[in-house]
Image (cartoon, rainbow, N blue to C red; front, side, top):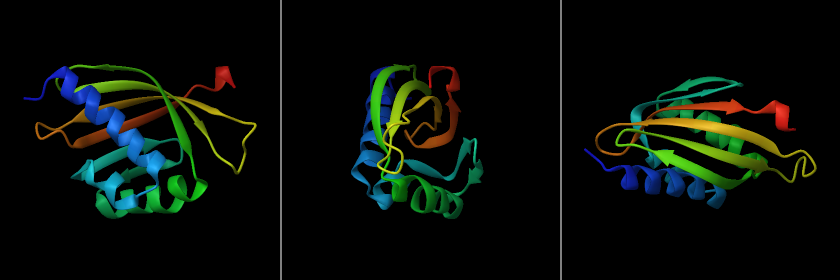
Length: 118
């Protein structure tokens, strides 16, 4: 089982991959049956994750500022501020909850926007 330090590291690396804009690198962090639950919908499995990250997130050129990350041996929570050149004056505040498999792949990622801060 991974340590909390390993889970925190993988969490930060995952968000760095999004900032880097490499779709394949982002997808490699997920298990084959990984799920993203997002206000835009639920995206389950590699093909749907490809649609979500390749069709929505990365084309928006979202840059994530990673705040506090709290982790244990199987999950993490991360505070994020996302900005996009498509709407640079409207940062998005989010809390992402991530559940990991024993091989440190993302099983489930739930995204919660914190609208009260915007």
